Image 1 (cartoon, rainbow, N blue to C red):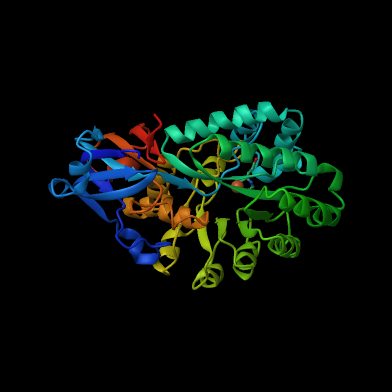
Image 2 (cartoon, protein in one colour):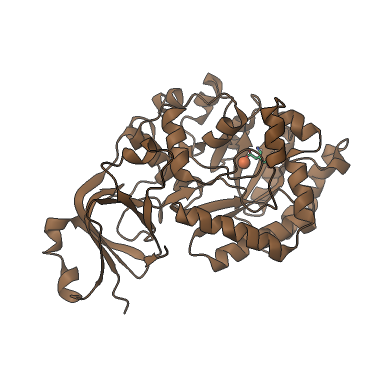
Length: 420
Ligand code: NIG
Ligand code: FE
């Protein structure tokens, strides 16, 4: 039997739950449960026990295993690993030349219209072998693990034809089979309209529905289906058709909505019971009232609004209306070339005026919900997967989003094992 791993003398054990919740909404987002001067015991890859140091003396752990592997975390805090519920981290190369175009004043849409943007990444991906794509993507995975991420959703969508979409999805599966990080895969064939379908968008939508979805589903390569429902990309009608086809094959909806306009994407997502609607820069009262009472997690991607210099969504208004909020990285080469979830928390505080407690809830339990895994991930609760990180010595949990440029992660533990 594995002896497990004990962390003792934890300055602050953050996001502890006796009765785990699936998501955190509205005013409850500003509450963060924690235990000062704590211990955490992990066994067989799961969280087995936690509590106050003074109670460790009474715990059966020490009696059963006097020589248990122990980390002394004096001065350090422990968080549940970040869950990053929206990424496009399987891609080839990078697009820093478009970054310069942006600095010079071109908009995201203008760059896309000139054959840059998603189509540029699709071309690069087409020219890259599957092995090479895996190596590049796996390096990104290892980078985000070292930055504290323990669960990640990854989308296809730089293939835009059946063969290349399958190539991406197989790379995602290979990551899942070779990394301790929890991975969910999303089929995003409807990410952009390929050049050859520029004047016949319907034909591309038909291809997604009639050819891509059935094959993707037959190989069980995806958990979710996503559509970029926005101005210049896919319409509400296209989105509905694609979602219905995906749902028929057992895929749950997630939508890119309202990044560029009031696209109707939020309403469509709620109508099809999407697990999440993501971006939401263009959100007003109508969208907010549609989301209230739904099962759909509003997910904000503050790094892409920051990177593209766009207006931020009205997050305070959304929380005041009682909505939950999730914050994800959108790690991708065009609008967010980072998967650093600690920086995402800082952007939540600085740009969206969220409190430290709110951003911590938004990158743990609420993103776990947006990946359909909040029963097993996203908090420190007995029986959940032992994905946690130990910080460097920090004065408080508020220090994490505050010190936005410092790497404060000391030790990463996934499935109860020390990773780095
Ligand atoms: O989430 N909005 C669409 N997709 C990505 C951008 C992808 C890209 O530019 O390569 C996003 O921002
Ligand atoms: Fe995205």
